[in-house]
Length: 160
Image (cartoon, rainbow, N blue to C red):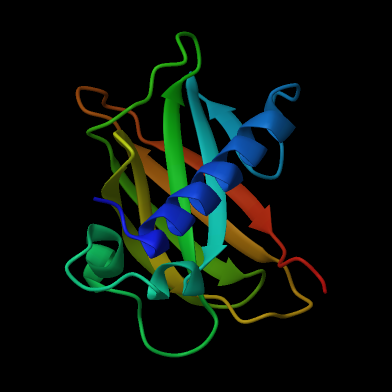
């Protein structure tokens, strides 16, 4: 049975993904969508606080080792699709390097996540609010494919 926190998280995550899909449906590439070598790559960045309300043993509360302590934690999520068929891609090895442009950053494996029956890849990154944009470099290894797929996204926190 889904708890109210889990329902709220799933609704917010699905709304965010739907917003990504709707805003990029008419564009070949955008700040949150790229097509590289036939793979449609969708990027989402969500505050880790969205997950903090989940009680432990729920998968969302413990994914990626749990929400890291400290402020400014963001959950970087990537969804992969075959651009020709629209079918979701699973079984990939995905990593990301997140850094402010012209500064050092962190590189992490984006772990597979099964939410609402679909696979996405994600992990937490510390991304304080700054006037500098962030660069998110995604590296994808598909099973049975020799070439590595790389995509670069620039991300700026929403201004309040």
